[in-house]
Amino acid sequence: AQGEALAREARAECITKSFEAYIQSKAEEMGLEVSARITLDELLLPCRVELYGAASVQERQALSETVSRELGMGEEDVVWTDSHQSSE
Image 1 (cartoon, rainbow, N blue to C red):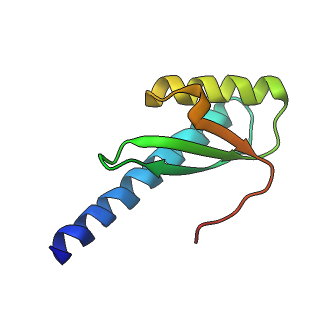
Image 2: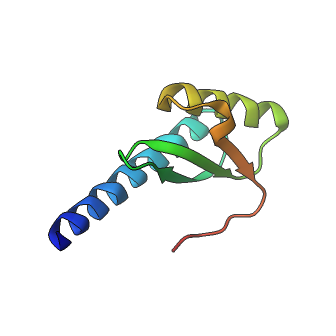
């Protein structure tokens, strides 16, 4: 059971890092410097994305729409935060 939990945690971390890198790549394509924090649900699917970085209202909206569409999430689950709070 403990091994399964560790394996799940490792998978979750890998998935999270992959999504964060993907979002940063999309932001860079738009000329933005953005970092992201992903929350996964029990199925290890993204259920919330917090974005941090300087962007205009239009840039925020465009990136939010892209992220929500490409990750299969509701736009309301992609939120922008002005201050970056690292979970590390």
